[in-house]
Image 1 (cartoon, each protein chain N blue to C red):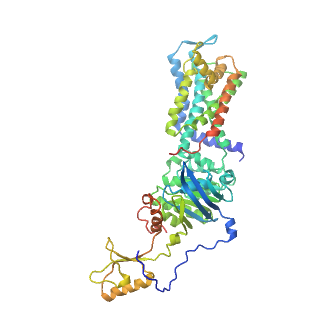
Image 2: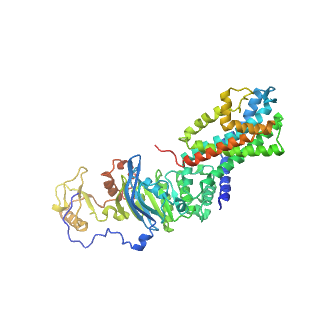
Image 3: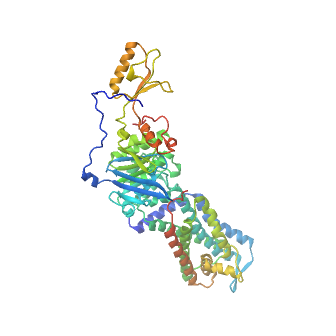
Length: 256
Length: 342
């Protein structure tokens, strides 16, 4: 089998194993919808000032929860799954076979991107059905798909990167949450930042990729202006994460 | 041990020398290691190991935990770098040309590591896709005896079945050389014997096997040759039957001395703490004849008379005891003194 066919075949096995762990699949798919319902119920009938416009809360949360779903299934899931597989010896065994690391990483990334597309479709459909969210079409849809693909791949790369500094599987969830939760809040995923957030918060959003990813999703769903710089910043984080992972990735559990 | 003077014997001792190795054979060694050294944070774990394993041979590295078995094997597999020495595995240097080696070897690690949600067949089929010339998946399943678990998920397997799956995964790439790192550690006796049968099967297919173990009976049952490794050095090497010149060591005669009569000079020694007299005559046949003749003549019993030879475990313990503090805790389970399965 050539590398591309092997990557695809490997992705199918990753996918099979993924759906057979119902707990993990259930939470990945229910989590964003659950938050969407909670937030829209909490803030119902209010509006968010979004640039020059006012946006209904329910509508605001559709792209935000789509972004949350993608980040969860790419960054969190990969970091945790990789540390568990490393501790269980799965990675060490794979590393003893001729499977190339490109195919191994590629299969995982492809699978996470595939799940991301599913999750965004489900979130958008749910938002459209219950909260009359706008569904992007045409060029806007194409741009959204670019943001989605680049964002999902970048968050996967960052998931691999952080897995190399997580000491063991028990530490994976706490570390991942400690890293991601503050950034989710500071990037406006859970609570809109409004038009006048503190300066340092603006900088957090500028530096880290989450706000840029949210910008890209909002541009498609809320009709906000689209900036290619958002995509570039996300891509830069993805490349940095990939380089870090290539340099520091560990196939074996830490001993001693 | 007490020893009698050598008496002429009609039974010459068997030779301890291995069969001569021709230069042509040396060139085609499956594994050739010279002067291997490896340290971790200043401590030398492997301290100058030489190994020569022929194609088609089942070779066992026997030693207590922490002796350097796994480190040595993982250097050969390409997982670890070495500090010093020459290593050739199937003619390839695993340190520099690991990618070339990966498709030609099969590895069974100490701990199983398989995704738990795939079935047995899916798992083996997945690993088959990694290799250029895989074996048939169903053939491998039959070979390790997992026919009935073909469609079971990995998480439903018992420890012994999981180990067989490990072996199946290592086999499916059709390797020339198979590494088995402590294949039966932690198994109950029946699971161990099942695993042994599988490994015996592989050897009969002509595969070269390098296994590590701290069970004497395992090495004796499976291996053509054994190297005992203690504290990073090989302290003895040879076929299990002649290891440590076990075959040359004289047999022991043990009996409870009869009350009221003392056997003649060379046939008697003061009994030890267990009440047994133990002698190690130069010619056991001759001595036994004399001893039993004397007993019949004097109409006395020699209670619990037995003739024993050093077991592989005796040799192993004597080799490891002097050089390693923790060997006793790692010795074979009780009841295997004389190499149970052999």
